[in-house]
Image 1: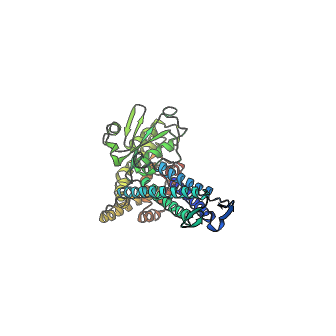
Image 2: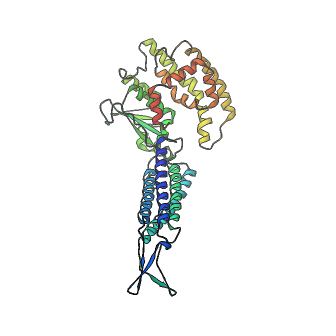
Image 3: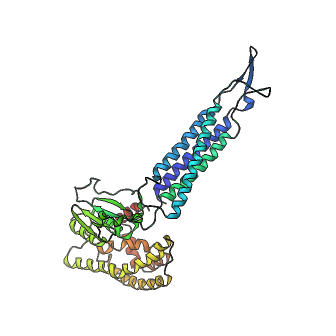
Length: 406
C-alpha cells in the first residue's frame, strides 16, 4: 500500500478512535438517576441536576465522526465525481456496499450522539407519571451505541476508500515533455513526490520515458489516460498515438509515440544536459545502439511474455501459460549468460559509462526481479547481478519508484 493511502487510513482510524473514546467518556459522565435530587420549595418539587461534561463530549464525538466522513468522501472522490482509474468490478461492488452502509450508520450515530448530548443538558422540571414524580435523564447506553456505530462507520469508510481508490494494473498514461524553460512552469527539474494515482508509472513503456526525463533533468507533465474507459481511443489521443496506446509525447507542436523513440529523441535533443545516454564517439554510439537493439529483439522479446503471464494475468484473474513460461525461462537463461559474459569485462553494457543501452532494460528488469525464479537466475550470474544492483541504485530509478508508489 502506498504512503498516501497509509496516511489516509491512519487519519481516519485516529478520528474514529477519538469519536469512540469521547462517546464512551460521555456515557461514563452522563447524569445518573442517583445524582439527581428532588427539592421542595413552597410545596413545589424541583429536580436538581449536577454539572456534567457529557454534553461537550457527545458533541465533540459527533464532530470527530463528521470530520472523518467528510474526509473519506472528499479523498475518494465518491462515485459520481471521482477522477482517475476505475477500480475492478469486485472492488467497485464492495465499495458501493460500504459506502451506503457507512452513511446509514453515520447518520444514526451522528443523531444519537447529538440527541444524547442535548437531552443530557436538558434539565426539566419534575413530572408525574402514574402518580409518581420523576426527573428526566438520558437512558443508559445511548452514548455507547453512538460509540460503537462510530467505529463501524469508520471501518466501513476505510474499506470503501481502499476499494474505490484501487485500480486495475492495465491503467496507463501519456507523458508530455516540455521545452526547457518553456511550457508549464513546475520547477527544474519537475519531479513530483507522488502522483495522484501512481499505478500507471509501473507500466514498462511509460517508465522508460520517465527514466530518460529523470536522467536528462527535463521538465515534464504527466497526463493520465484511463484505459478502462477507452480514453486512449478518443480522437484527441489518437492524434498523439494513432494506434491508441501509451505513452506519447507533445513537445510544443511536435508529437511522438513509442517509448524507445521518445527516449532517443530527448537524449539527442538534450545531449549536453544531464547524463550522456548516447555515447561519446561514433563507435561508442554504435555499441549503445547495438545493445539497445539487443534489448528489443532478444531480452524484451522474452521478458515481456514472462511478465504478462506471471504478473499481469494473475492480477486480472486470468490463467498463465505455464508451459510457455518454462520455455521462455530456459531461453532467457541463455540470453542472461551472454549478458553476464559481456558484463564480466565491462562495467555497463556499452562500456564504462551508463547509457541508453542500460536504461532501456530497467523497466522490464524491475518486473523480472519480483519473480522468485528469475531473481535467483540473476543472482546466480555474478556480473549481471552486479550490473543490476548498480543501475537500480541510481537516483533516477529511486525517484521513479517514488512516482510508482513504492
